[in-house]
Image (cartoon, rainbow, N blue to C red; front, side, top):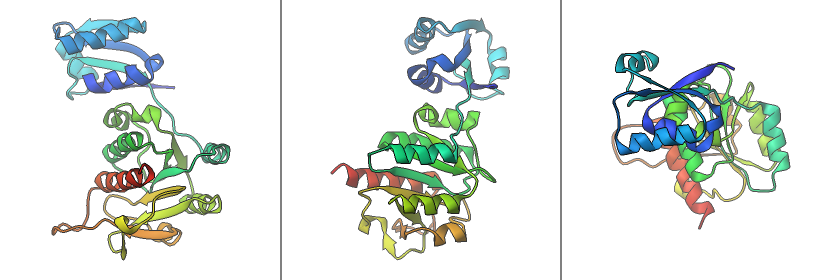
Length: 246
């Protein structure tokens, strides 16, 4: 498995906290000595991770000119799980399901942001499509800040088939579309659910929409017609989280 480069103090700290065994090597700035940075270095040393002090030019090259904050690490890439593993996880679980389904989301920043929120609200797993969609990449991992390691991501080839299987397992499939008549605040999110959000500009595809049990909208008072998909997914997940924890 080919390692990826992760950089930035917060992103690296998240990996140290959740999966230090996946860090192969770290390159650190030879002239940064602040307290927060030194605490991170101490954690790397404690886990036996090989460190190499380098100059800024080397760090700039390793991070492809992005804001590395003086640290870059080589990390084993987390991998998406299969549809078979999704089915097994659902059948083996006795807890109410809480899935986020992403229909052809192509922006890795949006996928990473959704994973981070999914971790915060205790989502069972995130289901993504295999074709014409973002997979787990270095950008996704950096934006997710550790959530790519803690939230199971299931990559499927036929989303409609999976949605129908979920429904057969007693999981209520709820799609988000701007023109729905029912508000998410009028919707019951308690029990086993799968929240479905669509692609950045096109929204839910026709077949995806038709195979949802229910369609809901996020009320909006402004003039802009839609929210960024990661923001919309966050609103949906937190409303579900609120109801499920009352």
